[in-house]
Length: 99
Length: 380
Image 1 (tube, each protein chain N blue to C red):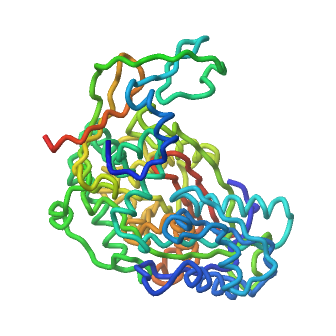
Image 2 (cartoon, rainbow over the protein chains, first blue to last red; image 1 turned 180 degrees about the vertical axis):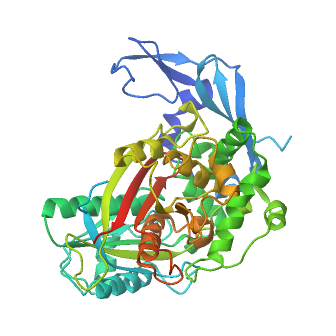
């Protein structure tokens, strides 16, 4: 997606999160985590995969103009926090120009 | 507050922050390490703690301790490098204090050193993005300033502040920097300068962002004070952490890790003295004052504008100009902060006539990931 000197395995193992918003849901208490965690706040270590909804509410956003070396061509970048179906905010990011 | 100290600062030294194209890690390290040791009367040192966030990224050097030690002629002293982002300095001091406690006596040398200006600013931004979650935040191009901007927006909206209110932070820090020979920015700034500066991530402008600087700062921490000098002791420290993933936090108007760290130190509402907060971005300076319990939530910006945190008050904040004016030397920044308050407690130039007896230092990693808060006192 971007000019990154990316490690192949590092990218490959994150495909479920990057493209399908795959979170994890605790089997015991139902808490949902994105990104996934190994241990739930309730102490349980058993999770199921859980796909987050594709629509949500934008909580806050900003337009970043001072970017990193990998994103020079995408400047400016828009970042937001979104609430996806009651799950704690997720980074919504896009290379949209300033509104 | 406790009366016995965890350790005494028997020697210190700083390099004026800048862009040292003619010096590397070893040169900057040796300058301050040797000066601090000399100031402390060249005591035996049990260990060297090197605080550095960027040694392998810009310095292309792992296991940096042996290179630094060799160059400075400090043979046969073990060195431990502490990396915890821009909070490395504070965490190195914390670790050295713990070592001092377990050793029971002796001295430790703590040196913060970093050189962001080995690379261009786009690369500096990339390395700063490593302070965030590399897989889920930095991967998408997020940098700490983008998250700080979101916090600034939420804070200003929640408590009905205008950007002009926030601009006061930069103006005050520049004003203080103009009087500090160790500042990187030694020029005062007017409101118009701040308002006309480029937007970095709305609402934050260039003046809200501390500049990257090359720098080195050193402390000699000992179990006993130097009998020939003013005894300045680190009385206590506290650690705190927040959620690492920014979007999983509930409240974007508070620095939770600082709240936790301040709680661990003890009640600070009645604190009076000098305070140094880690203002990588103006909003972090403001939020730190609230998180430390020095004022009520939502009131810091109003009190700042009223001059409550100026010199002569009960709580004097960032008299050296903070990271905003002194510069952000990444791993060294916490050690600069510590040296800054030590100079203020001693009344060294340009801080003469303060008569402060207590100090507080807040060092934070990235965007409220982890924090450490220290209290210091002149011990009589």
